[in-house]
Image (cartoon, rainbow, N blue to C red; front, side, top):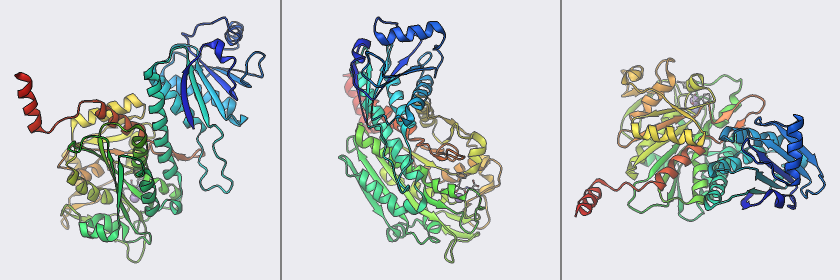
Length: 499
Ligand code: BES
Ligand code: MN
Ligand code: ZN
C-alpha cells in the first residue's frame, strides 16, 4: 500500500479521480462554497448527518465529483480514538467496493499525529490474512492519497512514520497468524534474514550445536522434545554510532506450545500457534526500523522452538543448568516461555545494553489480570518503566505496570535447584516476571506480558500486531533524544562546557 499527502482545497477535491473519496468531518470543519460542502450542509440541516463519531453520509456518481464513491464521515472532536472509529466506519461502507485508489481528505486542520493515526487505522481496517488460503485474494487497496488544506513537512513525516509502523505491524500479524507448520523456528530465521537484507541491518542465526556450546541449558531443555530444530536469532540494527549502547529486544519465539509433558487440554490449543507473538513483534519492529532508520542501535534476540511432548522431552522434576550457571527445576513443562527467555536474557549481557525489554505471551494469569486492553509491564528500572508506559499512552498501545516485590518470588524456592520454574497459581504473571528478573540483573530491564493483547480469540480470531507500536514509539523517542554518553565521556563534556 502506498500513502502520500498533498495540499488540496475542497474545490480541487471534486476533480480528483479516485475510486472513492472519504472526507473526514470534525466539529471544527468549515462549510465552504463547493459542491461537497453544500451537500453536507443540506444533510446536517435535515438531521441526516451529525457531528457524532462514525456518522456517515454516502453518494455514488455525484454530479460534479469525479470520484465514483463519496463517503463523508464525522470524526467528532477529531481525537485519535475518533479518527480510528471514523475510518473504520467509512471503510465499512467501502469494503465490498473494490477500491484500489482512495482519497482521504480532512475538511478541517489536521495534526501530524492524527495523520499517522489515520494511516494506521486504514491499514488495520483493510488488512486480512491470506497466506494459507488456496485462493488468496491480495489486498485491493493499493494507493491512498491523503489531503488537507494545510500540509507541512511534519505531515509528510507523519505519513512516512505511519507507513513504516504499518509495515511493522503487518509483519508481526503475518508471522503470528501463520499456523505453526508454516512458521517453524527455521521459517522465523528466514524471515529475520529477509528483513536484515536492508541497509544498516544484519542477522545471525545459531542452531542447536552453537546454542549447546553457549550453555543455554534451559532453552535446550524446551527444544529437546521437538523434531523441529531450534533457532536462536540475533538481529542487529545499526543506526547509531558504533560506541552507542544498544536497546535489546528479546521476543519469545515458541512457535507452538503444546505444554510439553505437562500437556495443555485440547480445546483452543490451536491458539498456541500465537505463542511466538513476542518474536513476531521483534521482527515487526525491525521491519519498521529498516524503513525509518532512526539514529539508534537496536539488537533483537529470538529464541525460537516448539514445545512438544516426546520420548526425549524434558520431564517435570528435571533439573537443568541455564547459561547464567543457575540451576532450574522444571516443575511444569508448560512454563516454557521463561526457560527460553532466561538464556536469551543472559546472552543479552554481551551487548552492554542501555536497556533490555523482553516481550512474551508468557502467562494465562496476565490475561485474567488485564484482559485484552493493556499488556502487563514488569520492570526493575523505574525510568525504563515510565518511558515504556509513556510510549504506550502516546501510541495508544497501552500497558500497565505490575508489582515486583521480592515476596512474590517465595514460591519459586525448591530444595532441588537454585530456582523452580513455577510457583503457585496466585499472581502467576508476577512470579513469572520474578523468575526472569534473576537473569536480568546486569542492565535496566523490563518485561511485557502480551498473552492477552497480542491476539484476539473468538470469531474474529487473529493477531493484533501489538506491541509493535509501543516498542517503536519507545525506540524512536530514544533516537530523537540526545544519545547518553558513557559516564567518563559525560564527565569530560561537563568539564569542557564549564571552560
Ligand atoms: N504460552 C502460555 C501462556 C498463554 C496462555 C498465552 C494463554 C496465551 C494465552 C505459557 O507458556 C503457559 O503455558 N503458561 C502457563 C504457566 C503455568 C504453567 C505456570 C499458564 O499461564 O498457564
Ligand atoms: Mn506453556
Ligand atoms: Zn507458552
